Image 1 (cartoon, helix red, strand yellow):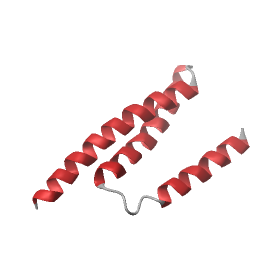
Image 2 (cartoon, one colour; image 1 turned 180 degrees about the horizontal axis):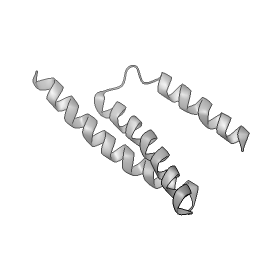
Image 3 (cartoon, rainbow, N blue to C red; image 1 turned 90 degrees about the vertical axis):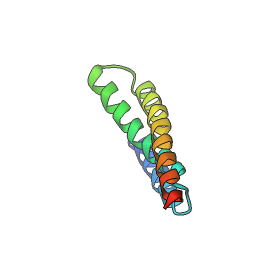
Length: 80
C-alpha cells in the first residue's frame, strides 16, 4: 500500500510540474480532476463503497466541471 501511495504521489508531483504552459481550460480540468478524485475517494471511504470507483467517478466529474469553469475563465480573459 505504501509503494502505491508513493508512486501515485510521484506521478502527481510530476504531472503538476508540467502545468506551466497550460491554458486556463486545461488547468481547470486537471485541478478539477484531482480535487474530484480526492473527494470521490473520501466519500467512498466514508460510505463504505469501492475506493477506486469513487476516485474514478469523482475525478471524471471534477475534470468536466473544472474544464468548463476554466473554459469560461479563458473566454472572460480574452474579452479584456
